[in-house]
Amino acid sequence: QVRLVESGGGLVQAGGSLRLSCAASGLTFNSYVLGWFRQAPGKEREFVAGVTRSGASTYYADSVKGRFTISRDSAKNTMTLQMNSLKPEDTAVYYCAADLVASVLRVASSYDYWGQGTQVTVSA
Image 1: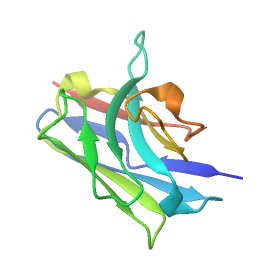
Image 2 (image 1 turned 30 degrees about the vertical axis):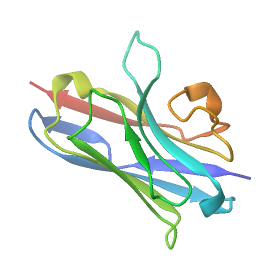
Image 3 (image 1 turned 90 degrees about the horizontal axis):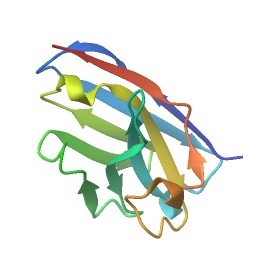
């Protein structure tokens, strides 16, 4: 079965960096659209970044554009999210997601498979 496992979360000061990873198994990696979402306490899950099957196209939420970089490595079946210039408002549980179609890449309901999430906390 499809399994997604996030890692790399933690506590960092504002202005710092973190690198999240998502290890995928049980799927044909290059057939899936991949995305990162996050959910802060009391808020809905929101889109952070997405990458197409080939990796040729990437998409970002306006709030993270220029600070975060999404990438995928088909040799390792992993996706990463490099997060720089972190802000306290980036604090959330971060989830990776995968779907064969992801008809609307920025929408959480487009994805069938989800990881368990990793906590990112940015202190002021």
